[in-house]
Amino acid sequence: MKAALFDTNILIDYLKGKAEAVSLLDRCLKEGQVLTCSLITKVELLSGARQGEEKVLQDFLDAFDRIGLDDNIAEAAGRYMILYRKSHGINTADAIIAASALVREAVLYTLNEKHFPMNDINLIKPY
Image 1 (cartoon, helix red, strand yellow):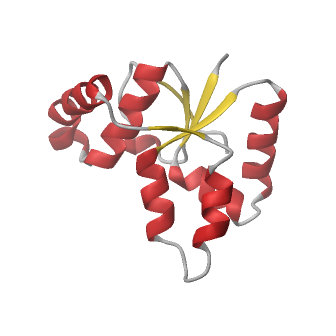
Image 2 (tube, helix red, strand yellow):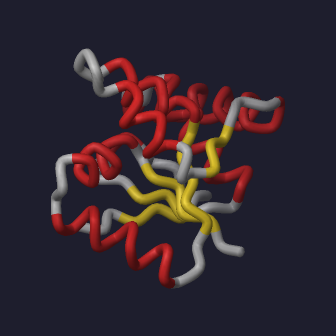
């Protein structure tokens, strides 16, 4: 099955009820794609949660296959940092998300193309 990896910004839009994000996730489900996100995204979402929202976020994230950090992802993220930290200013979180897409052969959906200059991942800016 094809995997769809969602960057944090897409999931924030979904949680806010933004029509484009809701439509995107619905379409991916209808196409039989596995909905995934990095554990980095989980950290980012939970760190921005207001008091009392944690349970809703946990329930929402349970619908996703969450990708943790393993040796292959760590090594790919390290390579991305070497290649793009100075030239594009990427941070460790974005390098890990991109490496997760690479290793899992997932399509990465994001609104921040500039954070993902890698040419070896399949990136889509959906709206």
